[in-house]
Figure 1: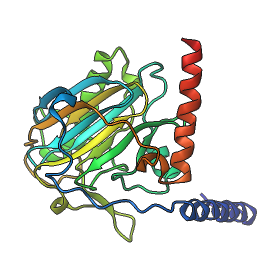
Figure 2 (figure 1 turned 45 degrees about the horizontal axis):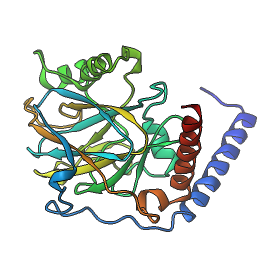
Figure 3 (figure 1 turned 180 degrees about the vertical axis):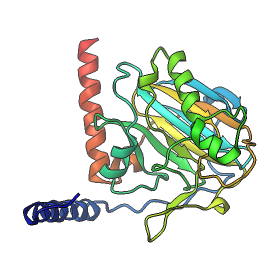
Figure 4 (figure 1 turned 90 degrees about the horizontal axis):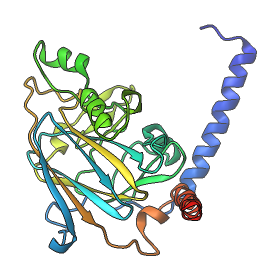
Length: 279
């Protein structure tokens, strides 16, 4: 595409406005995020556990997660990638939006203190514990084509098909299966803009705790990430622990870390007040 001089000037003006807004946003994020938690940290009280599930490699799981409950994803094998999708249980047309999660918070890196946003600007999930910090918001899960390119011919389960099946179990449709976020997927971008895989950042026993900020439908897929260089298809088991999370304090990190996070939770409060009024 060849741009005219006027079009080039418009692009440059838009770029300058974007950079100004980005700089303003970064200046208004005063709280530093903590380093990854030790893998023996944050034990869950036995009486807080609602359900436990082991998901074999290649398979998927669906659940409903009430507001205030949390889901711990455990990479028990150290070789798994856990992809998730999420929908507002009251209105599944509202769903996880990985692009807004990145651009609204000015960061593609997810770790404790970040929130996962919906396409309505509300917080769906808060990352309240994390031992890894090696997650993927840019590439997405596997599909039949990526599996064929990596492993050749064969019957290899993939994240895309898992999510389509999961959507059906949740009363949704194929078109409701949206782009996912991958946990324990150590993807980075080099100086040339190329994706890199840092397998040394993935460890057996790593876990991430996701607290639901609305009543949610959750789908989890346990398939190898498309950038995982392992030549063999051998995903390990994962453990999922659904539990009652502690009540957020007034200075809860996820709710106060930035102006963008505060705005998302203000949107939640406004929405929940309206939902209560409609009940």
